[in-house]
Length: 488
Ligand SMILES: [Zn+2]
Image (cartoon, rainbow, N blue to C red; front, side, top):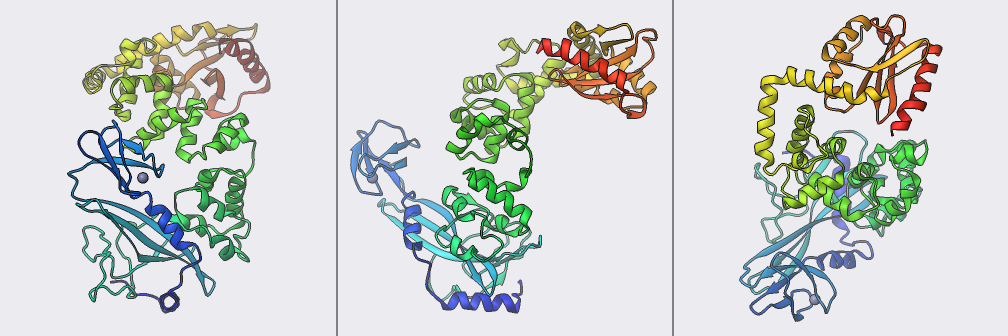
């Protein structure tokens, strides 16, 4: 059991002695408890709203959401034989005692019983001291179970539970990161502190679940300025991830999309994950972004989507996913696409891009690949080199051509002492293009190795990974401007 430092014990005692909550707290709790309601559906489409007790008719199905025509709130529909249902939300209040920030955590729990009446209660169960050390200073009271296997928060009252008895939370996994922060007292508390311009109060007002500790622990000017700038731009959800954004640069450099996306980003208060998807989708369509976001929420990652986008457009991916009722595992699909591309299937054709049975097709291609990997790559490189040969170019001094074979890559690596041979697979499946630039009189000898992505030169290196000289760069410039850009 964790020991509580004397200084913190005093802080907790001060908090325990005052039973007063900041002004507006009760209204804040009530507002969230309003979401904790259901629509109970019985025979003949009869619906009952547990919030306002209004009865109405709706043909919507069980587990869908419906708007109550009386209170105008949207709730989930459940069957009338429902015996028990509960809702839980974590709320928090910031406090400042002896110049130390304390976050107090509460659980708001609502139970809908067999009579379909709802009972809400809110109890405090944890306190966290904000420090800028990586070590967490989290304390819990007797409402938190001591059982090691899972965390339960008791809402009952009685002699067994002492709400004022605090112990350190010592489990290896985090107790709570995100909570709905009470916004009304933040501005006043942060006045005369380093956060006075941070606008954290606006962020709390406009975002639902936030990691307040994370916002407060980086108390250097640099971190606070970044939070402030994003909050002032009204990109509140992005402000929660302020450390992901550089402070200087153009809009495009900071957000990875051009400035004309800004009104869309602001209007939808987009999250960091949504921004990552927007960068790939490049379409101001929040419905599509939310659809894709579900893949990230349930087991996938934005990296998966990024890889998929390298082979087919995300709009086509959405189409494929809808054909399979969203039941597409992105980590399998991205590998399937990679194998398919390496095997030379035309991914513009839905027959290959949209496998009927993804798992089966994935396993089939993977097996082929395991057995004949090298020869598949060899063939794929020959195919790529033919595709890219339209970009061949020369003047009276130099020539540039796509790497023709796997062997040529290995040979280039040896001559140049670089690692271009390790690009073989990426080159073979179309993620990058590799070109050899050579002296027109000595076309067999390596000179400059060039990597191209999206018709732009991303790397050009002479022997030992040095930069090319001015003449060579001039030739590459000319090639990029006259040949590559024309293809785009
Ligand atoms: Zn209602």
